[in-house]
Length: 278
Ligand SMILES: Nc1ncnc2c1ncn2[C@@H]1O[C@H](COP(=O)(O)OP(=O)(O)OP(=O)(O)O)[C@@H](O)[C@H]1O
Ligand SMILES: [Mg+2]
Image (cartoon, rainbow, N blue to C red; front, side, top):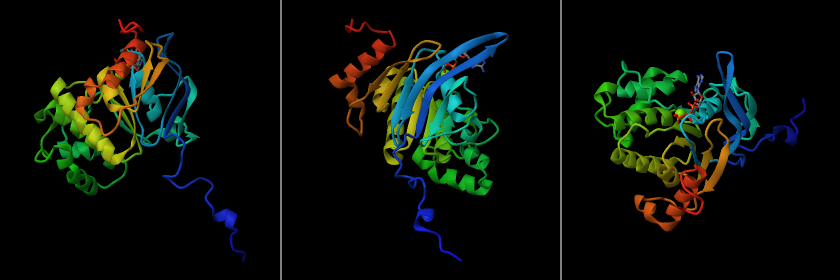
């Protein structure tokens, strides 16, 4: 019997954590929907990347294909063209299912499940026993501001609390890539600001790769390392704004000249401001 050669026991790929490949690469992606006999072009030749531990915001007019892009990345929609790479390797639609934690545009809590049961759902669907999934969810309720609400049903929770339950479910899925589709869309300005600060705090601690869809320019600049701006449908990348603001970020940064300049650049890319700032 021969012992294995050194080369055969060295892994072909670097161990997890040492890879430099982006968590996500969207390469020349186009997507269409069939409407009767007509074909609706939704995304056209979109390329973007999210690095390990990077926070990228995706912004664009309503209907430009942002949710479709996340659906494609999550493996729920098959693109017309292009590839999706995870950790440096192309991954088929089917194999992408479950690879990212995905918080869809509506919070999608099940009304007949309690907050705790809703939060535990992703773990249960992933094959964890109900008892262990509930225990894991319960352990993190205080951190998500849900202490004392384990047994409440979605209808008994405020909008912000429902969002936090959906967030907890997404975070518990424990994936290195999180896809968040307008997670604060339904909230009033004060709750929204509180939730943004809370998300930044969570992200600072866990440093997962995030691709977050928003309509809100200030939110995008406040949260992200990079803001990708899409054109109206069919969505194409109009502009990428690298946000050179120090972290951790506090709300007061929104008055800094650098913040205002980034915001103006994104507004201009959206066609909401003349390039001369007028
Ligand atoms: N399942 C579907 N079947 C057919 N058309 C669809 C489907 N889902 C979305 N569309 C259409 O595709 C386009 C892009 O939709 P999408 O939801 O991706 O946009 P969006 O950028 O997320 O918009 P919003 O900002 O309003 O959420 C829209 O014109 C929409 O009507
Ligand atoms: Mg959408």
